[in-house]
Amino acid sequence: MSSILPPSSRVWWNQPLDRVEGTWIAIALVWCLAMFFMMPYWHIFGKQNLSNEAYRITAEAYSRKTQEMVDKFTVRTETDQQIPVVRPPAGSDVYMIARLWQWWPMLELEKGQSYRLHLSSMDYMHSFSLQPENLNIQVVPGYEGVYTITPTRAGKYSVVCNEFCGIGHHMMVSNLYVVEKGQGSSGDDGAGDNGKHKDERGEK
Image (cartoon, rainbow, N blue to C red; front, top):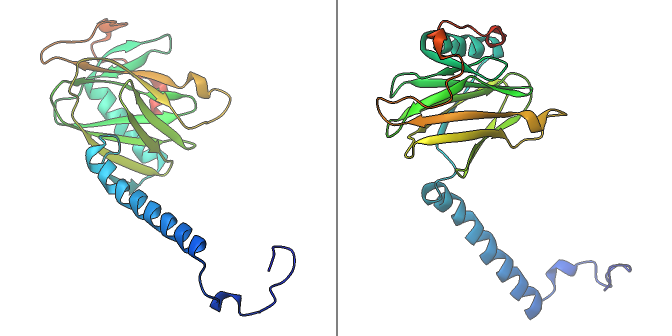
């Protein structure tokens, strides 16, 4: 029997198993089982894949909920695009929009407090990657993903898109701030807005 000529016996699957062939089948089976059990182990102990909820939602409905949060809790704006930085109460729901090629708005969270982070895309598949933390979340259009997060270290974090989304993919970078209780972060561009600024792009 070869890979070119047909087998001499058409009932080839009923032949005795060769020792070498059986060894490789056993190795492959053990490796598959190890990888299978590593998935739940890494989910629990790896601190990378978060448990989540997911709901179907339209871009308009999700944008509306995000805008309501921005209108209530904006503390300042940043960058030349005047992106609002919002600081919702500890323990509340916080929303972030992914779209070509921007994260909107920026979030300022309190260290040690838990939040329900909502993520959805307005157009294509994106990926919420929080640097330097080892956290990566797929952001899917038409779905609202909800993740419970508890920041443990104060500082300025970068939010980048790890899913190639077109020519401006490299520009899809934003900030996320974690502050101590009773404190605000530095870099307050437009702090005099007192939460009154309303970014028109958030109403798409």
